[in-house]
Length: 256
Image (cartoon, rainbow, N blue to C red; front, side, top):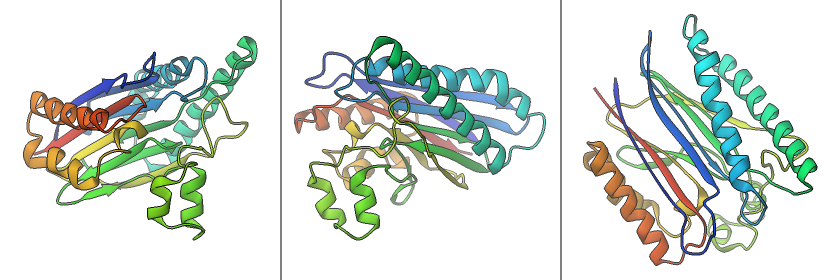
């Protein structure tokens, strides 16, 4: 299986800094090509959110170079990736928290990280950035770690009520801003001729899944420049609809 990757990030219409960070790389391994991707949304309203998000992205990239290359000599299992990434986010949580205490500030970040192999995907999520799979439909692969998402899960409010709930961005966990981090892990079979997307919450609040499909279905995402243009169109649509957050989206197109 082969992969085409692209990404777009935008400061948005009201922020002074872009606190989102991301990385996407295609790696050649003995298993074939593998994509390692991550997106982090520095905590809006907190000081130095871009430092928190960049810390996690840089730590993830260091793990790819120093640990993943070694893991590729053996088997890559669900439990190995889960254990490695749980340690990674906990180490980042301790490091960012210590920096915050030293500076007497509060900072934090979400993260959604993904490893996409020819046969299987591995995704870890903390917070409310998301991963999607777009094929003949748009499927959310992650679960938001927010107060509102928890209320929906418990049946206290409906999904429709959640969309306009003023607490929709209140996180249960954020790396660097929580005493304890409990990441969620997701696994599945990598689809051929599909688009895998990671995005910060600023990318999805003002557009619908139908609009995502309209611009990002696999038939329209066949080369990197086309992918970038299509994602940029959705970023601009978000901004036209007065999305105030930073906006970042990463996409991976699979093909044979």
